[in-house]
Image (cartoon, rainbow, N blue to C red; front, side, top):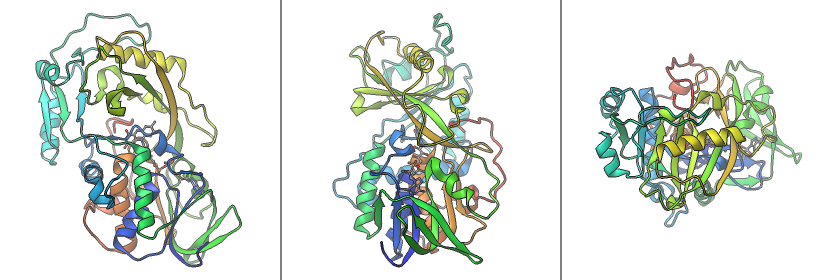
Length: 413
Ligand SMILES: Cc1cc2nc3c(=O)[nH]c(=O)nc-3n(C[C@H](O)[C@H](O)[C@H](O)COP(=O)(O)OP(=O)(O)OC[C@H]3O[C@@H](n4cnc5c(N)ncnc54)[C@H](O)[C@@H]3O)c2cc1C
C-alpha cells in the first residue's frame, strides 16, 4: 500500500467515488479509496432505482439535486470519458398527487422560481403524452384488492428534465475516471479503525493489518457507516438506520405502450420507472410504512421482496395502467437505505474530530445527489471551486445543523 496519502475515502459506492473524483478533478492530492467488496456498487448503490428528480421540500435540496443531475446529464463531459457505460435517460418525472387538484399548480410556481422546468398536465394532456397511464385520482384498495370506478379530473406535474441513469454503469464510469486521475482504488480491503491523536485524524488501519497515514478520512461507508462512527471519540447526535427497501422488476407486456416516464404516484403509494429501454418496469413504494425495517447487520438481510409487498404494489401498478394484464414475469430485489431518523436528510461535511469527514444517511436520495455531495466535500478539503460545483452552502447538510422541519417524513421529503 502507498506510504503517504492525503485523503482516505472509505467505500467505493456512488458517494465515495464521487468524492474521490471531485477531489482529483481539482487537486494533486494523493487519494486512496478502500472498498471491502470485490467490485464497486455492492452496497446501496447497486440496488438503487437511481431516479433523478429535483422536486424536494427545501430550496437547497432542489438546487443540490439539480447540481447532481447536471453532472449525469453531461456525463461524458463530466467524467471525461469518450464512451461512458452510463447514459442519462431524460424521460421526465411525473408527479400524480391524486385528489389534491391545487398541488401541481402550486408546486409548478415554487419550482419555476428555482429554475426547474415543469409542465402541469390535465388528463387529456397526460394521455396524449403517456397513453398507457390511467388518470384516476383515487387510491386503489391494496389490502382487499376490491376495485372501484376510476375517476379522473386531476392536475399532474411533469418535471421535464428528470429521468434516471443506470447506477452500476455510472459507478464503473467513475471508477475509470478516478483511476485516470491517479486516484488509487483498492477492492477487498476493509477499514477497521480510524486512527487519531489529540489533534485529530492521523490515518486508518485495515483488516489486512496495514496502516495508512492520512490527514483526512472520509466516511462514505453507506449502511456500514455506524461501524466507523461508533469508534470515534466525538459527539454525533444522529440516528442512521440501515433500512431494508423492497423493489420489484416487472416485464412490460405488449399491451402497455411506451413512453413511460419516471412516475411518483402519490395516490397509489408507488413509484415506477422504465428499465432496459422500457422492456421492464422498476416498481417501488413511497409509503413510510415501507421504510421501517431496520437491519441490525447490513451484511445479512432478506434480499427478496415479501409476498404482501409484491401483491399490494402490483395491484397499485395495475390500477395506474388499466391495460396491464394479470400475467408476466416479476422479480424482486432488496437494498438498504441509510435513514437519518431525525430528518431524513443526509449528513455531509466536517465533524468535531479534525480531519474526519462524513457523507452518510442518504436514505433514498444519495444517487442523484452524489456528484454535488462530492463537490461539497472536495470544496471543504481543498478550498478550490471549479466547473460543475454546487453553490449550496456547506452548512445546509452539516453535522452541527438542527434537524430540518419536514411535512413528509419519507423518501419524498
Ligand atoms: C432500493 C433503493 C432505491 C433507491 N432509489 C434511489 C433513487 O431513485 N434516487 C436516488 O437518488 N437514490 C436512491 N437510492 C439511494 C441511493 O442509492 C443511496 O443513497 C446511495 O447509493 C448511497 O451510496 P453510498 O456510496 O453512500 O453507499 P453504498 O453504495 O452502500 O457504498 C458504501 C460502500 O462502502 C463499503 N464499505 C463499508 N464499510 C467499509 C469499510 N469499513 N471499509 C471499506 N469499505 C467499506 C461498502 O462495501 C459499500 O460498497 C436508493 C437506494 C435503494 C436501496
